[in-house]
Image 1: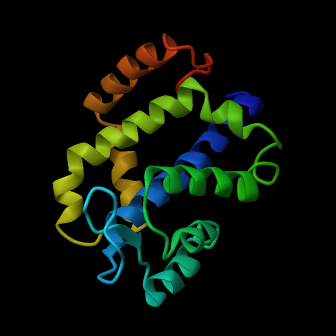
Image 2: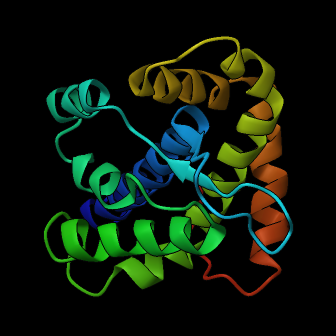
Length: 176
C-alpha cells in the first residue's frame, strides 16, 4: 500500500477509535443525577459519570484517549455533546499531531470513514445485548469489532455500505 494511502487509513482508524471510545463511555458510564431537574420531555437527564478508579485505568491503558473521557465526565449527555466532544478531541489531539493539520475534515467526509462508522453502528446494534450483559473493557470492544469486521457477513455489509455512501456525495476514498 502506498505511504499516502497507509497514512490516510491510519488517520481514519485514529478518528474511529475516538468515536468508538466515546460510544463505549456512554454505554458503560451513563448515570442519572437524582437532584437534576427534569428535562423538557419530563425525563431525568442522563450524565456521564466515570468513577475515579475507571478514569485512572483509562489513563493507564489509553492515555491518548483520556482527555476525551475527562472532557465528557460529569456532563449531561446529548447527541450534540457527543459530536462536539469527539470533534474537539480530534482537533486538539490528532489533527496536526497524528496526521497533517486540516485533514480531519476530509477524513470525516471520506467514504472510508463513513463506511467504518456505519459498520461500527451496525456492530453495536447487533451485539448490544451481549455487550450489556456485563462490563466489557474498551480494548475488548476494539478486538471484538475487529474480529466481526473480518467475518464474511461484515465484509459483504461493508461493500454494500461503500456503494451506498459513494452515491451520497462523500469523497471517493476507497475502503480498505
